[in-house]
Image 1 (cartoon, rainbow, N blue to C red):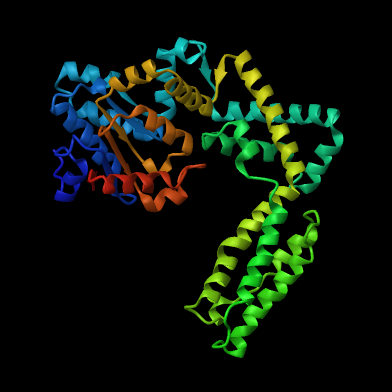
Image 2 (cartoon, rainbow, N blue to C red):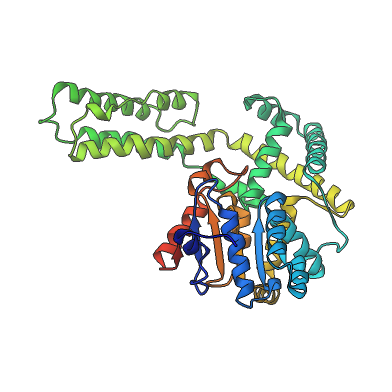
Length: 400
């Protein structure tokens, strides 16, 4: 029997089974061990192993949990059988099992096969190349303009990168068209010029000559933007934006003029640059979205012909099942008294949505490392785990 410290017992949280729990721990601190002990304690408290869902990110962690639980209940044959059947798996393993059990409701072939990463990538590459060949034959000029605008000639690779990021975030293809607002680039730049005039109208009498130089530079920069008023967004605008200068460390602090200059530098210029870029590249962006759409159709058709799903499909179809069928979602939720999540910092946007749909109030137990969230799995959303921790703390749940 492992002897746990008071902090570890608090993290295991068997005294707080009626509350959502967030366990924050660093690398090598035994997060998975704590989760295993939580599972073991629930079983000893007479909860069925079949009503506990434990989700991990690697097969190695899944096997570790299963082996440790099997050892803990080796002398109890009935529990050993239930442990072997328990929902202990990776995210994709869980989605696969759930979709097979609810294939008709989910709209998938019950005999679907799961593409491994190598198979999926190879099929994606072939589909992207074929989609671009068709697109180039039908609309050569827009595709050539798009190719010229890229830092890399690998347009197929760029499509796959955007596509994977989009799906991991839980976005649909239609969401890309509205992801960055367009049409206000010139008005945003005109707004910068107006803001500069507000800065110059401030009281500079107590400013030293060297301090005033920073504001004068802003004024001259704003005047250059004002000269471009009414013209289409062009390269000259980006040149002006790139030459913005205002050293706030050399400006007089604690006054309205300084605050306006700081707002200009830290907020307004970056936002206007993004808006201007969205307008300038609107045509190429539309071409890229068109190309992604063509690729998506070919890729999905080819997977359907093979009755195959990739890893993102598993998550997408599961989310669609839970979102689109209230009865199915409620039934699946009622299957689990507790949901345990290992390495929560590695969760992406789509997986976070999946967990939100699965869990009931006060049945979620998550362990993770906030500091690792920025180094985690590819496409992991670093905001998911800190947001959960803050919610648990704000609502007075169990934080360890």
